[in-house]
Image 1: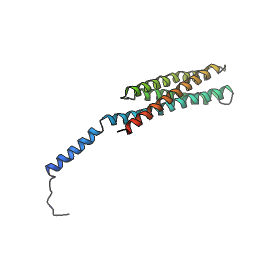
Image 2: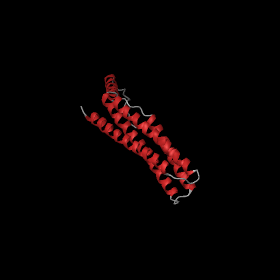
Image 3: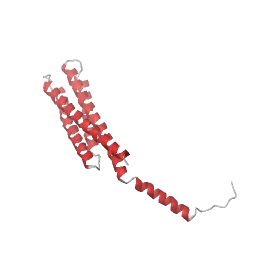
Image 4: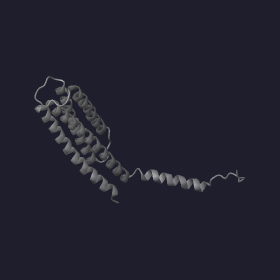
Length: 171
């Protein structure tokens, strides 16, 4: 232990600390912060689109394997059931993101539409798996269309994300 008397910080020191803290907070709230937030949110949109694409691909593989008799019905159903949850989770994830820039939010909306459109074919694949064997062509065609829509949306999101990152680094 020391025998030094306890000293209170001087008022100018406290005032300087408060000013610096406030400056840091305000700097994080300006236009640069919004662009950074948009880039991060678009990155999340991209991740959710990847999840939806994975769900569509999983459903397609399960339908093809089941149609060829290489996968038991129970296994295929469980696999596609998980894919349905993944696809709906992607829709929820994209739907809850808030993006400030109007053009980037428009891209998010298009991604949400593509992810939403992918849920139906994945559910249809699960329904097909629960029915007596029939041609899988219609289900596979719907899954292929959903995959194409997701690929298009992913490309648009990547372009918007690149633009937001470039704006973030611009002075």
